[in-house]
Image (cartoon, rainbow, N blue to C red; front, side, top):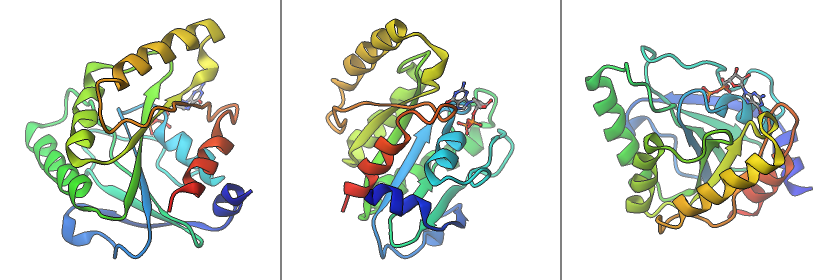
Length: 200
Ligand code: GDP
C-alpha cells in the first residue's frame, strides 16, 4: 500500500546529470536502475511510476550519457543510469561515462540500492559483470530484476533464475532475492514498488 502511494503520487523528471557537480542535493534517499541497452529499463521505470513516457523509450549510442533523476512525492529519487553494452560507442564517451558512474556509485551516501536489470531470456552476461563488480567495490547493495518474463516459459524462467543465482553468488554486494518482472503484463511491479518503499 505504501508502495502504491509512493508511485501513484506525482513523479517528475528532475534533471539529467553529466558530472558529479550536477547531482541534486542528497536530501533524501535514492535508488538507481542499471542494465544493458534494450533490457527494458525505460519500460520498467514507466511501469513502476505509472507514467507512459517518463523514461525515454530508446537510447542511442551517440546520445549524451546522462544520469537521469526523477522525484517521487515524499519518496526517494529514482535514478536512471544510462544503458551499457553499446559495442559501437566511441571509447572516449565510454571512458567518461565509466568515470562518472564510478564517482556516482562510490560517492552517493543516500543511494540505498541499485536494481540491475537482466533480460529473463539471457540471464547474467559478460557485459553485466563490469557493473556488478563496480557495485561490489562501491559497496552498493544491488538486486537483480529479471525483465520481459512474459517472453519465456515457466521452465525456462526457472533455469535462468538458477543461472542468475549462481552469478550473484560471486558478488558480495548482491541482495539474494531476485525480482521477476514483466512491464508488459505488470508482473512484479507491485513487488518492486513495495521493496523500494521499505528502504529508508
Ligand atoms: P531500454 O533500452 O532498457 O530502456 O529498453 P526499453 O524499455 O526501451 O525496451 C526495449 C524493448 O523491449 C522495447 O521494444 C520494449 O517494448 C520491449 N520490452 C520492454 N519490456 C518488456 C516486457 O516486459 N515484455 C516484453 N514482451 N517486451 C518488453
